[in-house]
Image 1 (cartoon, rainbow, N blue to C red):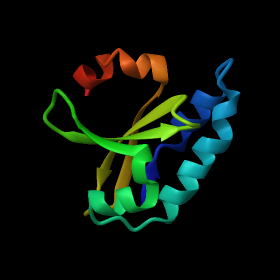
Image 2 (cartoon, one colour):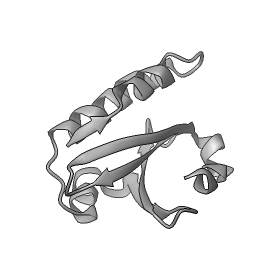
Image 3 (cartoon, one colour):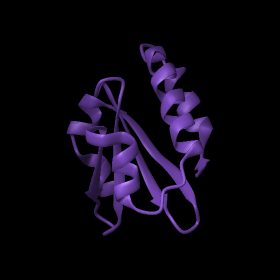
Image 4 (spheres, rainbow, N blue to C red):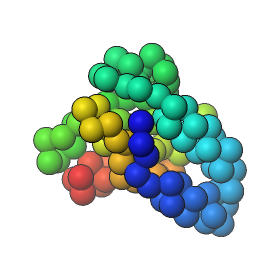
Length: 105
């Protein structure tokens, strides 16, 4: 899968108090980059219970990955036929729990 964009990941882990996200985000990137997903079932097979699929305000379904033991959450749009993964948001667990992001997407 081609990932758009690595820059968002890097910007996130360069924030103060979030440097611990670098290793798990890099691991997520490596797994996703080498994947050949054709369906949500393929994503679940790769990430198991650490990924959920959530319907957002626009009606689209996004993948929400638990990062670093659920300390962070990565929200991505996966286009299986394209094949691309668009990193939409990376949030702390507390930011994610506010659910505002669901109305922005």
